[in-house]
Image (cartoon, rainbow, N blue to C red):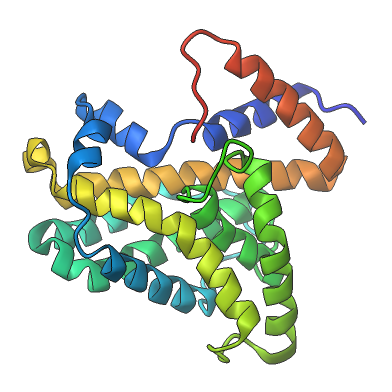
Length: 273
């Protein structure tokens, strides 16, 4: 069955949300300065601490249960509410800098996860299911990048394929034993794969907070852009999943790649890398 009408328009929107631009590109466009170049020359201090906090945060989020969501509601996701909450938590990071990361990141990431789950629900997901909850966590990897990426591993479907086995194994383990068993290989593997990509964006966020030209923008604005980035990725991800339920994965991927190919032919177009 061919994808057409509003569904086709939604898929085009998903391509734009998922393939371009990256968090730091959005930040640079907002500030109007070449922040990527500045960040490239900044020393990455305490990178191991950032990665450790990222791993701990995602491990906790894996056990997080969305209890307050009305799965039968058909209203639009309340993205503005979550942006405000994230901005408030960003004030903490802006005021205390890197030392506050261990406190601020779990708070802001939990807010983002709640927002992603809200978006998932609005796109028809049953967030009471394990599969939908793990799909929410996938957004943190889909919205980031990894130092190990090459040209064939940066696209949306490529990242989903890389995560597929880890997500499947973790789902089987959780269904059988729960996520409390922290040392379980299946859980550790999933957290590691998520953190390897999400940690890159966290590092960009922390470095951006230390860029002198930002000045009064501070942690609040950075966090607003941070949550906006993952809301966009979440929206794109769950649009694709909704269409896959209707048309099948192969048909959606085929049309997605056609749309992306046409988009990349436009002057100045650049996919996330």
